Length: 278
Image: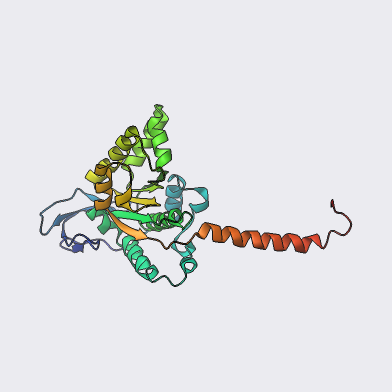
């Protein structure tokens, strides 16, 4: 990827903002191919902290190392955009728009860092592909950029917050400070306790103030979350909604697998001859 040049205009493509940024400073490329750049809002005058960019492509070894440390489920750790089957949603009119937005989010990830706006992937149907899609997006980003990614379900995060061990504290710190964080299944619990809401707000607010990108997955719309008004408002302001069609992909795949398995078992049963139990 080419080096960003001083004076280049970077436009925030996310809905809700028309702010453009101008690159004001660019450092020399170091021996590892990395350099720093800083941008300033052309209207607001807001100047960001330094961003790290890599003039070289990320190697397979580097991306594999980041995936292994991300905490993503094993089944999804190697999944990329090509592994996500959009055809299961049929002729849903919104699919192409969603794909276009996600492609822009991935290929212009550095611009999204400037805006500090992530994604909120939701559908009311469980098993619709939300978690898989979030991991596919993260792995596409990992292939292209020198960043750290973390994955955690909200229930697991709250458990870690309750754990007072040094290991848990270090894990929570890494999660809070990740360049890109996937928070899976927020809203799965409809009745968060006061302690839960306090910890959720602390995480959301920490990342909100530092413009750290977060991908949330949920079975409810962001404004319907029951994790406290302050957290909800920050999540809503900080993310672009990605609505998946109401299709239970997990069940479709399970039904297909069962049908194929039964067919194979019946075919093999004809070969048993007299060696049977019933």
